[in-house]
Image (cartoon, rainbow, N blue to C red):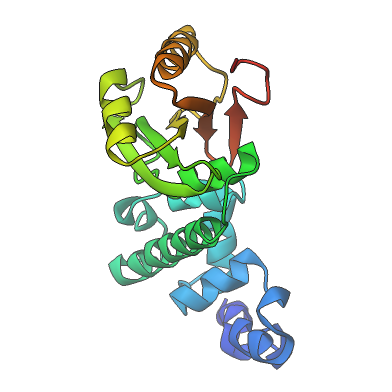
Length: 233
């Protein structure tokens, strides 16, 4: 038993197999997701190395980092060997990664595809467990002026007031907007309410000479585009 524990300790691994040393010797891209998390938590528990514990945490979310980012500090603490400090480190690191991704998206001069819009919107979903509705405000060159949250609701939906959307668009001098909201279930298929709301906003936009370029539904790491599916006219 003692020999098994000794072998499982990262300190007893070959230098090339230790996450920190591996990063220094081979670069950050050589590390697996589990090894990167192991660096954050530094140690495992009596029966697992930091890497093995990290693999088990990742397995619980099927290896999906976006799903991992949804876990709270309390949920992470349920894993043996993860205390409050380690849980906070994981949550903070994933949030930093999300913000970096968002910053890269905002550096683009203009929105040229549904995927561009998805990346801009995704960083604004502060709590993926609740539905939130956003608009991306654009100028004539489709450059992002601002992304604004319009409403947030519960697990199954949120109330959206089209008048608020156009008031914000006019106040910011937007000539076009992209609608966006998340589905906490992860299912990106638009509901009949989503379709009816989109049609209503598109119609109002034509009267105000504000183009509705797309409506993006976000579900974890995937999305649905009304424009790509020919539902924006």
